[in-house]
Structures are given as C-alpha cells and as structure tokens.
Length: 106
Length: 124
Image (cartoon, rainbow over all chains, first blue to last red; front, side):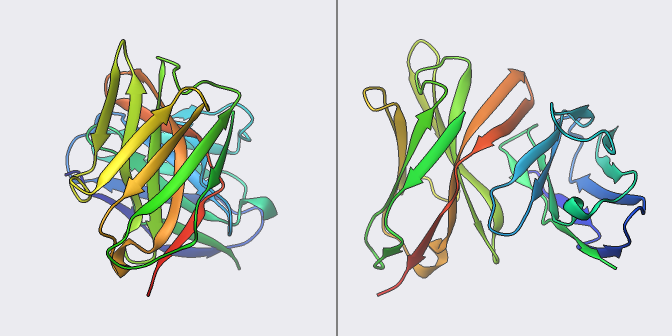
C-alpha cells in the first residue's frame, strides 16, 4: 500500500499569509495526487486534481505542484473561509489519504 | 450531482452496518464513473472502503482491510447504491461517506461529489 504523509499536521496563520502544505508519498506516484478541503461537519471538497489542476469554482489563490513523491498545496493569500483541514489523496494505487493539515487562525 | 445518505446511526457489535446513497443528477449506471464508499475516524483517518461501477458489466472492488465483510450493491431501479459491512466491531465506528469517483485516465482517480456523511456507532 502507498502511504501518504502530510506536514505539518497543523499550522496557525494570519489572514493574507501565504501557506504551504506538503504531502509525501512512500513511492513515486507521478502526478496521481489530489487535494481536498474539509470544514467541520462537512464532507471533503475536491480542490485540485492530478497534482495541479484547479477544479472549477475553486479560487485561484489555491495552487498545487509537484510530481514523483513530493507535492505541495499553496494558498497564496489566506482568507477567512480557508480555515479548514486539508487532505491529499493518491490514486496511483488503491486510493489512500494523508493524515490532514489543520489550518487555524493566528 | 447530489448524494443523499440514509442509514441507522447505531449498530450492535457482530451485526451488519447498512447505509444507502441516493443519487440525483447522475445515474448509478453511468459507465464513465464509479460509486465509492469511504469512512473517516480519528484513529484511521480517511479510508477508502470500496466501489462499484458499470463497464458493460458490474464490478466491485474492495479494500483489503474490509474484504470478506463488505458488499457494495448498485440499485438501478432506485438510482442508488448501498454499503453493507458485516460482523462489525467498535473499530468500525466512523463517519461513512458515499462519493462519486472520476477516472479520466489510468492512474488518475478522484472523488468529485460526496454525500453528507452518516455517523455510525458500533455499541451494545
């Protein structure tokens, strides 16, 4: 099974800050990596597919990059509605998720 | 696409967990997508359980962690699909989600629509 490790597990940031979340795979997964946002009491929402493809309706301040085994999700200017938990998910093998990164207000 | 889940919130140990996902805005028989079940718990995080999909015939695929206890069944007449998990233990306590899986190319697979989640507690 492919293991996904996210870092950090949590972070505090101010409105307007640039935020970067990292996801590492236990093997090369090429670009088979997706990012989700989850708010309390809600289901995850797909933000980015195939490492860097922004989903329709997702603000352009979100971006994804990486290939192989290391990927990043960047929020260029954090907004109040971005405070949530973010998960990566690989699809190279049986789908598996990272442990999540909780983004909190500083 | 909207997915609406229904099912009991409490199941006794050793019994069967059943959750149904009703689909609107798509068809369970759509041969371009898959229909998945996942769960989320503090101890196990987000975990994919399995999926069903139609590609000239119906297929089911299941996670190793639940294989032998799980059945995912499509119902074309009701346009829904269901999850059954047998012989549950307290470790199966989790928030269960249904989702639509999109696979545009080999190695690419994501969940673009999710149900609202069903909290299932395994307790006597």
